[in-house]
Image 1: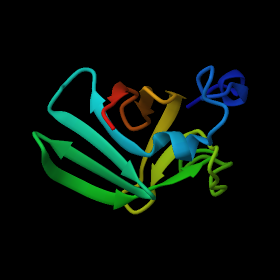
Image 2 (image 1 turned 90 degrees about the vertical axis):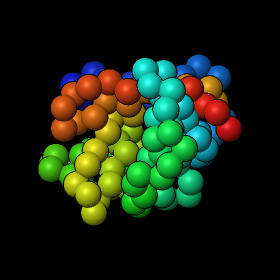
Image 3 (image 1 turned 90 degrees about the horizontal axis):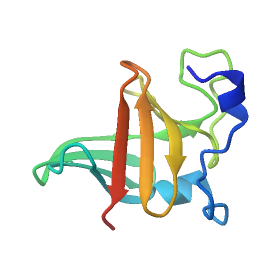
Image 4 (image 1 turned 180 degrees about the vertical axis):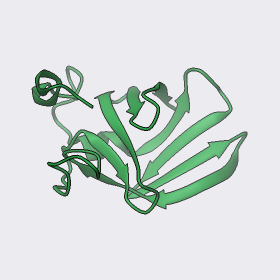
Length: 118
């Protein structure tokens, strides 16, 4: 989980302040570690592709915290946690701008980096 210092730090990278986090997330993102893996965030849907084949699609929200945290349950367009409520999955948005996205998966603590492809 994020420390209190991290919680007050913006996930918007410099120059990205004109849009909300939700707006910046919209689009397709290719993993910098595995070119076959593409993440698409469209409206409130989270879609995983591997090798151009859709492998998963579910709804997401942005929230102040992961579902099990005390301050969860406060969705909004500028919150720093990407949550799939039905799947009980959560990622901390470490940084996002027009070109890149960095997430930390709360279940394992692994970091995921993406570059925008559209």
